[in-house]
Image (cartoon, rainbow, N blue to C red; front, side, top):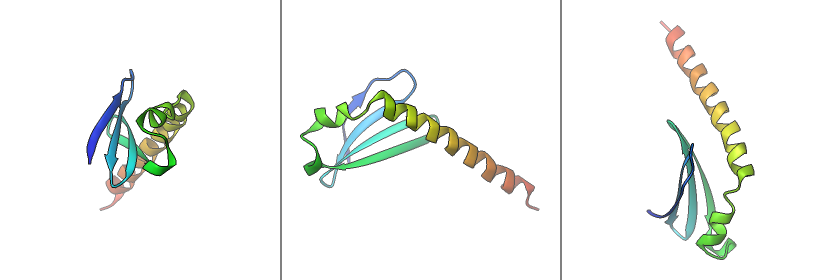
Length: 83
């Protein structure tokens, strides 16, 4: 798997990888990450993949990141309450 592009952003680390005839768009925020996989044959190249990283996608990703953090904090509270 190799990084083929990075999309600059003030809050997220956004990288695009190429692996096994797929593009992988990885969005990171702190200790959490989300990965979206797209088959190469479903898009017309890297620029089209980049164009799919819209503000709407990033806004929805932020909501998922907040849910992920909440889930992780809950997991820690369960861990800490066990003898």
